[in-house]
Image 1 (tube, rainbow, N blue to C red):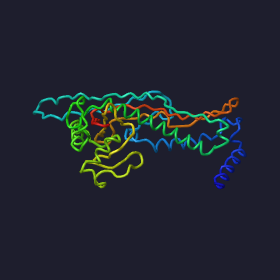
Image 2: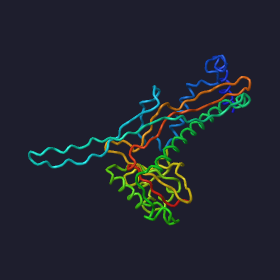
Image 3: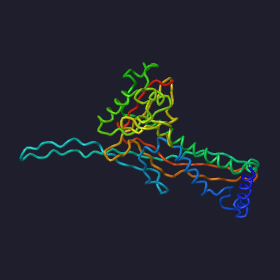
Image 4: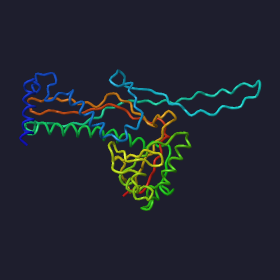
Length: 308
């Protein structure tokens, strides 16, 4: 305890020596934003599960412009046999357009001088971690909502109608195979499976998944929990039950390995602070600017099952 107090005292003393806490500085705050920016970015990366599976476009990152247009190729038809002296049939060159229009997302805390003077270091670290978590949570929430709403393929456990899902209709290996089939029929390659906690538990109860060497083990960093049927499997808190149902997501990639959804990053997560001298508190604001868009709807298959 004495060692911790000494470290805190030395830290604050050095900060005062370098004039870091005075409002005369351009930052007008109590911390160095450049240092904390890196901390926020690290916390965001550590908590993201779904967003890293998308294709990232950095064309607008820290550059002028508010919209990014990209083209997505359409699967062409096979060539045709041509008789001697006949003209070759002209095929339309087709592309589709995807428009990214980034939006800002943020989270903030306030720290009073009184709170600062009592637990400055630990409190700032805790706030930084939580702000990073909030930004990551929002980004994954945006991704999951888009993918579930826009999936071009769908499978329901045991082949029942969605409205007829009962407690016996839990996700199983057949559902995973059927979802892979739907994506493969659209000439894409199944790559990732993202499940909620209830669906993960149902999979582990199956005989085929009880051996940790076949499926999972402990939950690893960024939600990775193992492999099944050639798929990388992830768990996220953003897939949760609603009316005793949940939708897992299977994502496919094209022949070049490009994901079925993309993220256009306008600005990476950053932290800003502002000190209010009269009220004696500091605003601590974390921000990020991006857009998430679907690239290929048929590269996504939802797997709906019972989840209490």
